[in-house]
Image (cartoon, rainbow, N blue to C red):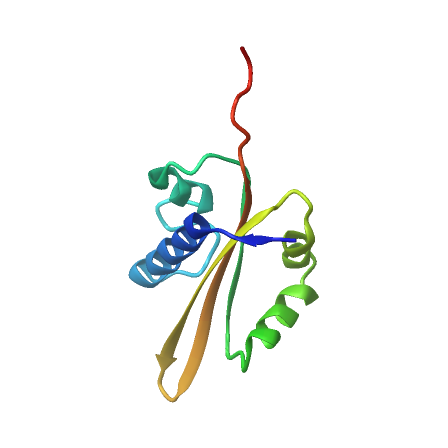
Length: 117
């Protein structure tokens, strides 16, 4: 089971803020940064990291999860045994008379401390 992680929530929020600020929606920013680059300044030491992104007119969190589960890659991230920790950030954007939800879900696993002598 995935556990909520405060650092991953922060990474998700920074990712979402970056997408709004630079006006893009992609796994790589216009300047070439990805989710692993967002983790660096937090000094979050991980053994794996990934993300799911979504943008749409979702009526509920269940709709959002169903959307991700229908996509093979998003589903793989959600169900991966490699991931132990997760974080989430969600924001609403109004465009004309329509609302769009943006969601960033960050997955990963904290690196084990080096136990070598």
